[in-house]
Length: 456
Image (cartoon, rainbow, N blue to C red; front, side):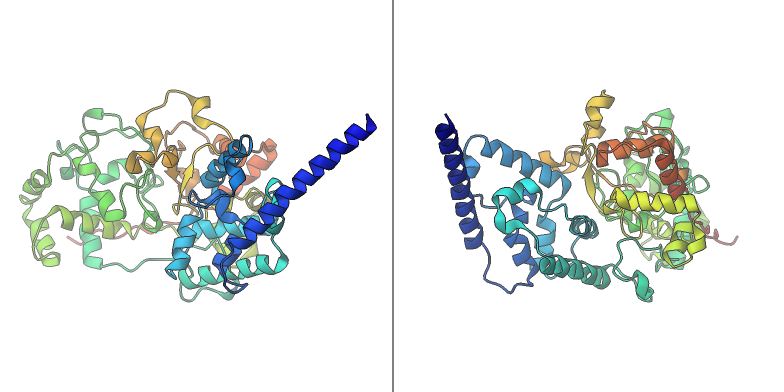
């Protein structure tokens, strides 16, 4: 019996070594013939593309039973957490790697989580050495300094993932003045009852405080209204990203039958044309007068002024140690420990990526009653990988923007933090830790300096 057990053990070890030997040879063969510090080469050498792209050529065993199921699971899970393709595309074009991608890579490089142990058990070349790790960290910093750091940024902040808000963005003052008036003008709605400010109240965090907004005739919208504050810093607009910029976003609600319910820009313009003063002011800025494009351009220009800088968190980032309380500093350490800054990154502490709602637990199964709005980004792309993906909301002024999430299902910030820890991070923290995180989020509330309305 001992001989049989020993023989089986020897066969198992020999089989394992044979598979590992083949994989090692396969991994070596697929490496590009480039310099050791080439970023593409490092990704390929350590097999990052195996699980974080859908296009990597897999070794033969990927088609075998058990191994196939394991690898399919790893690829699905890896792609949900982080898609390497935008990074590879940016590298090939010498362009900007997405800000969230940089944050996610930096986090796992610093923690040593990647590649995972199960991968390294059969991919012996997958271990990330200190030299490659440092090369990647230096490259991430260089990317941030090159593409995401504003001129005049203090040296201590250059290349960092989280940045303070700028005090302002370049704008055309005349367009801003027109945009202010149009943002508050209910004539953009069919029955002259609703303006942009109806759902995006500038005295209430840029939202309306409702689960979903009310449109013309008190119709309920399908999704929670995101804040208009700092929206100029988002990489796209709406929860599902269907608008590429502020101007496209501004053109949506006026013609949406549930929101402002106007039937056409001609209908809106017909009313604005009756306002002689607005018409004259408009033509001084836009030679061709009223049009849908010009109206939305002016509103977008005004919305660029809706920044809320000088929060306690901003002052802390700039070096003022006294700007945060002891509790908020504990919250900030928890924020980093739980990698909250990998999605809520950059100047806007969010708004730079689409993330799956429910990475670590099934949010929608727990909540129930699915709606079309729950499909998220999928409604735009029809790509199954985008189902339940939503643009990450900004954390700025989040203490003012309840209720939370795209469905407005959570009334308190404390519960929203607990849910994010459960569904996105996969942890449960004591209530005291959650309180510390909430205190930090309170410290992310900034100061809005209203634009002056045009003089009479």
